Image (cartoon, rainbow, N blue to C red; front, side):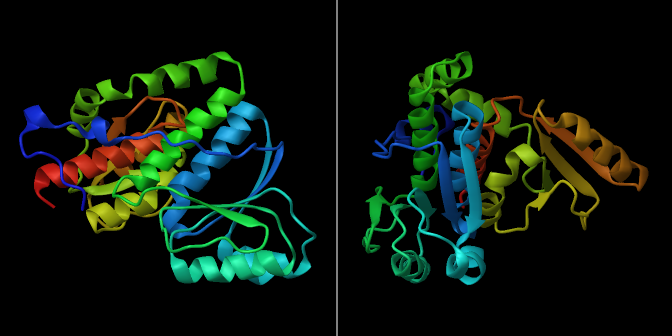
Length: 268
């Protein structure tokens, strides 16, 4: 795992965050394919295209696409695939090749090669690859539009080297040893968080098995979460709400960064 310096004073996670060029001219209609290991970058792209650019995005898992949709679909010209597993990439590339679908496969695995009309875009494989791709996606889509939100996002990303102390401060608000429930805004972070913490992080509507719960939410979806918190408290659960009120596009990425940071400080 990517190791941070042992001293809190020397922590500099943001120095390892990188922005990559994504050489894709995203159209107004995109077919987006992903697997469970690439949810963060896939849903970052989906949300960015919809929220910033107003695009139509059809998001499908590679399994559903390969087994249920591709045999009956027409030729697709704007496919974007996220996959890092080599075996899974062969399956989806074979399916896309068979119907001459066109597009890109974005990956952290240099062993995955282009096939047919699907061009592979490879990014350096390190522990923060998924995060760096996700940040690069937001920067790319923000640069394609001209509105206040996109300007704010670009400004935030330009100052990302100042992120460390904020991450450390917010990380300390979360009891990572408790059972963790995430509000809908944070769903793209679930798989990576579960892997880093080596435990099951749950969606807000799932029933927790323990009695001590950290409920992580944002201002965007706090209302529906608080109804669930009330239900859990009424059933005797000890629920702590953690409000990380940041832009919903960046929120899942920052939460994964906090989880990495917690694991490294813990010595994992």
